[in-house]
Length: 308
Image (cartoon, rainbow, N blue to C red; front, side, top):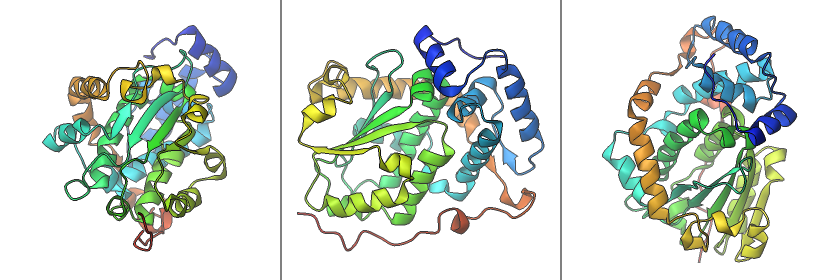
């Protein structure tokens, strides 16, 4: 069994909140690998560190772990637009340099959630597409699943900075793509969403917020917070000192954080290239194949929304 040892704080949280038992992990991994070997439609990673992330994400329920793995790899095939950008594409580094998706390097404590800042208005919608932004982020997320024990055990909080967002940004996102992103984040991924905090919200945001709530489950709807300019309320959830210096913190500049992640992706280049081969072949699924329509079944656009 090849799994990183946890720091004492995360080991305690894993035991108390995720039902982790060092005596049973090996058997649990063996059971998941045995199940995967009998699924003709799945092409899945089977290394211990990857699979234990899904076990932890499902609090060691074997049935939930199987369901989540199945859905995760089905998403690769049924929503390929969420994964369309490769780490080797020149566009990846270009998008990273925009500083739209910023995964902070510091956490408040060793067992605190990882913080991600999404600066939704920081890119030119005439030049870049939101799905490319999202698929660049999904590359970082895969590394987090494999490497970052704090993200897997403690989850993550997202700060959505809406400064500069215009109608042109929203027109790139259909309710269908929003539904797919929600399914990937809350149902297919092994990471717990611990809250999304909206700041610098534009006029008309209430309309978008209603749509966002509609695609989330009840638990995650209850973890949405709109602070707008009230940063003191944000700091009750995310300590100011761990934020980038652009937000008044001591967590390094956005450029420094971005350069760290670009180097990390380069370090993982072979792993990420190998990861491209995994997914599902629904024609080989025993029983009824999954389709995008049955999984998502939402269409439309934001063309009726108005922003000043």
